[in-house]
Image (cartoon, rainbow, N blue to C red):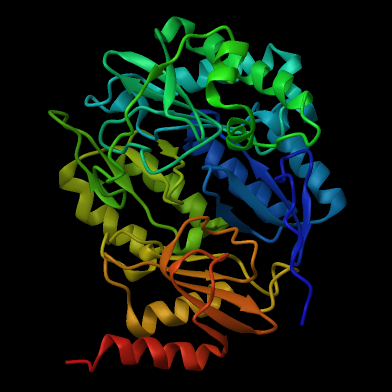
Length: 422
């Protein structure tokens, strides 16, 4: 039996690339998840010039560039920093992890501008070197609600609307500090500093807010930050709208258009052409999302069908019923040294063979690290020694009901469960 893959305690950044099976990989973190078409073309060109042209969109809305070498990773970083897309300080760049609702000021149904709040938090992080000691996976989420809320997502610190104010929550807790937009960055700062002080007092230093909440209780963290907290009822987990295809915005002549990336990947040439489409049909911007589906904005309903045809011609997804949208898959072997199965290739095979209904999800993980999807799925396949273990209605850490299956056996099993074709 092979050894379990090592789960890394950090994520790659632009200035701290990580070695993988297909070379080194580095991440670009767009501020508030917004890219101009020109910037998207710059990133695509640099990915092609310095890497292998494969670009993955992560669950934090970052662009992960693959196939770099130690030298080309330095050249790539210089290009990105020179364009003003990243900090030259490795410590700041490591903790600049702020996710925001993708539509921001373009969504009239959102109670606040998530992009403006996210940028305020990023500016606060840049001006507070003490926070550069935060763990590199520590993340702040700004959920503006509206047409594309982030209710299904969690982060170490979360900002959401609550009864006319902004509520700042801790992962693992049920309380929140209420504040106005003008004091939001200061509230987040106080809680992040409290996390560092209380974590330093523990014999085993917590690396995430949830672990600290479990260790000392959320009341102690709010008290350490000098903040009063109120009970904040959990919001519904249901997604308000679909993120693929035309996304109409209330009483607005222009809409958004979500583009699905098959298993989270876009090639550099396709990203360049997608940026061109954003200029031709929209306002010339792209928004990254935690659903691994970039958004084009400023789209008219009259152009939606033509845009969908051009998106599909790029090998990307414009149909919200496409079965690939309910399948999560990591890069797998040989791109990832931890994987022993071709997770992405096998996922594509299963999607083409059987499809997946909208109320079912399939997670194909190349190993037990579960990089592509942390939650449960209707079926989870975990690669081990070149075969798969199958887990029903659970995550990659669950107990498998079947082990050692080949992809042929899995396909036959799923086809059998689906029943005869008409």
